[in-house]
Length: 141
Figure 1 (spheres, one colour):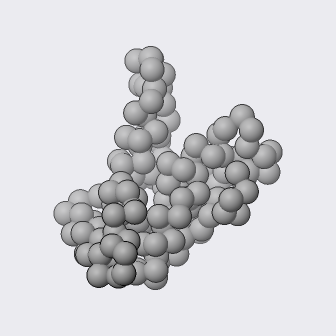
Figure 2 (cartoon, one colour):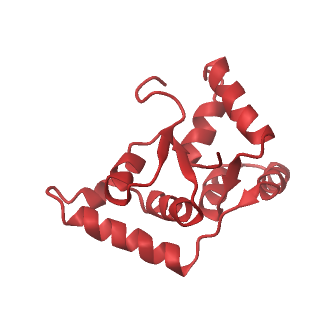
Figure 3 (spheres, helix red, strand yellow):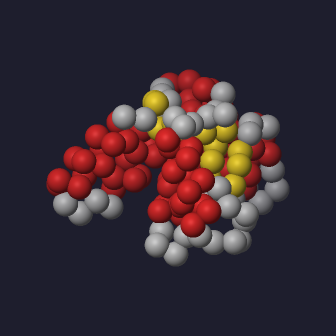
């Protein structure tokens, strides 16, 4: 199985306080070439790098992963899903971050499961029916 790992999965699996099993699982997925990267996740992961050398090194590491594109069809799909959520009571579309719509659309287009620790993907999947998986049980981290 291949996963488009959301920023939340990366961050939660890399925190010092993350359980060892979570770090090990994510490392196994990386080593097994099961983690796919998209530009939105890459941008989010690089956003907080505070030194040019670390930015460049991390970018090179992320560039080595398989890539999942975000192009015009994914932008359109993200808007369509937001529109569908806006039709539901409570304007649920505003609760989902724009980046998460795009990441989910990219994963759906490529036939990948979104690996995450973010309830936004459950909201999107309620419309799309696409596979999503919590990197750890919800509320456990």
